[in-house]
Amino acid sequence: MKIYYVDGKFVSSDQAVIPVDDLAILRGYGVCDIMRTYKGKPYFLKDHIHRLVNSAKEIGLSLPWQTREITDIVLETLHRNQISEEANIRIVITGGSSPDYFYPQGNPRMIVLITDLKKLPDSWYENGVKVITYPLERSLPDAKVISYIPAALALKKAKETGAIEAIYINRNMEALEGTTSNLFAFFGNTLVTPRDGVLKGITRQAILAIAQKNDLTEEKAIPLDQLLNADEVFISGTNKCILPVIQIDNTPIGTGKPGPKTKRLIAELERDALEFSSSTS
Image (cartoon, rainbow, N blue to C red; front, side):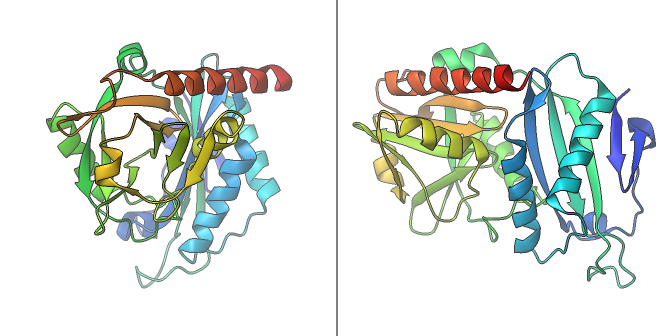
């Protein structure tokens, strides 16, 4: 049975509860972040915690914990679970209990969950995946909030069409990001990813750093009509890493197969993760 950290205590998963008057339950008020391990070590831990703290600031949630405290709690939770396989680490900061059931009182709760890492099908990486487009703009794109209703509806629509992800399209008909992923496109030797109106993923950051060694990179808007004519497209995320996209709605991308530049980045990101796990083991 997993051990979770919940509001100051380490408890077994079947004892992990918070009060029903917490604003996370009543109003969906809170932020979160998720990372994964490599050989038992949390990947990009500092960056994920930095983003978590920034998300809290974006929604006006004051945190009583310093970055070092959050880090120590995450590491201790991981240690207590003694994982033998790779895992996800989920951190949730709730709005806390509130007497008026609306306004935060400066008593947020922190929850740290260790969950199994779900392995995605090898065929997704070997053959590529289909995604759909979905009209949506997130109100607070710089904050990773706990309310995922719009994303859940978009992903439901995607699955109904045999797709694995939905790409948000804004009012200017520009492609933004997926429900849980960032978007990239190769136009010739230039790798482009949207800059504005998106949550800047930690894996996105790593990909840009790696790509700059061999390719031109740009952070700018990608009009949908240009995206559909890209040479290669892929999405990225903590658990996805890099997934080649071979079809958007009914339009094949490039040759309809994972492209060579995307394959190269997949290999380079995997190598980077292996170097990280070796250097910290």
